[in-house]
Image 1 (cartoon, rainbow, N blue to C red):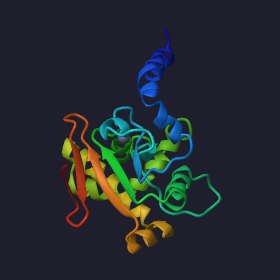
Image 2 (tube, rainbow, N blue to C red):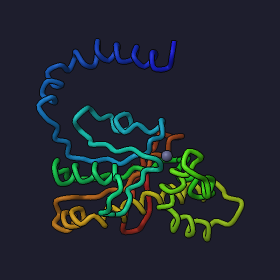
Image 3 (cartoon, protein in one colour):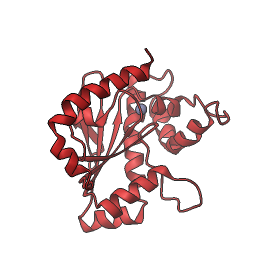
Length: 212
Ligand SMILES: [Zn+2]
């Protein structure tokens, strides 16, 4: 059996249980979505937002990518997947909250800290290197505070910095900043530790994360 075939078996269980039990709600969802929260998370297979928040379909508009990053506002001719999703969530769906949820043992944040893919071409890590280059300033800050050899505290700080950088970048989008100023949009930083299953929330005033 292929891995995907195993997943299709899972789909059959869902169809028999989850879907049929909530059939009416699925029919209602077919008429349109109205999530109140947008969530940015990592593509990492261990940090599925619906599982962590025990959320149901329709509750969260989710974007996942390498290292949970929101790029800065760059109105150029490139293909901006995260910016398109953000624009849709904020200006079309009118979400009232955006959560940036980093996580422990993040490979993307680790690569940003160690420079694992720097200098590589597309297909050799080059796309990753360019993407996580968004964390270059954060890397310099963390490196200055944590001399070699890099310990878990250094990686953790890099993971936390990733959330702060994404929140900063979110505020470079004019329609995010305007809505936040007007009080119709709130931004949150969060961090899921994985190993102990604990979610931490960022207090932006102090810059500290603490257990929810
Ligand atoms: Zn990650």
